[in-house]
Length: 174
Image (cartoon, rainbow, N blue to C red; front, side, top):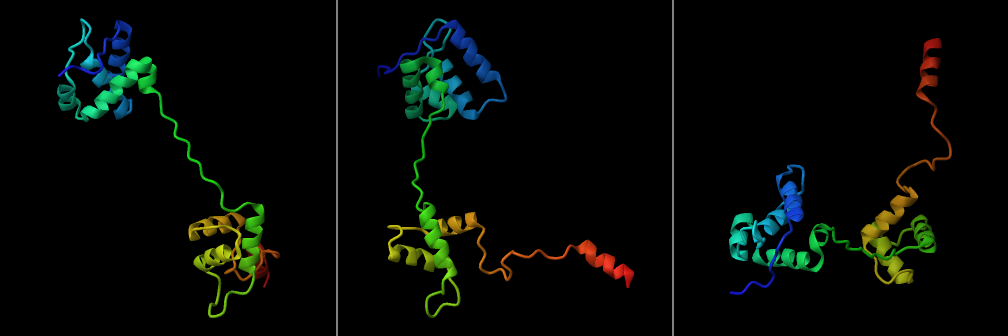
């Protein structure tokens, strides 16, 4: 079978890959990529193994070996070892106005038959009122966690408790 990607490394590239391969503080992925390129090198200095032979030696699939070789052909060593950036786009469900409606809903009376609002009840009510299309109860939890709202706490946090030192000072004087 004819090789799809033929790798011919320069002397400086071989040295760089050998450093990566011999360094113990490199990620295993980077180490394996260096080994694949060194084993597939078809220049005078390289062994020029086939993909199946390399797969047996490095213990990775031939498809991965093909991808590594393709990256090298497309952009050299820099392209092989660059990290792929995958942006994660997630639109916030609640903006400031939505959070204000959520907090107002939390402070209102719970629905009949319930002693208090639960996260799932809040999620259902927010969707029913049309503030958002869909929402998970964990999103409600995160939004309320940000506001530091705790409806289970007795005090509203307006008055501070007496420091313990003052209590001990009164006790000593008695």
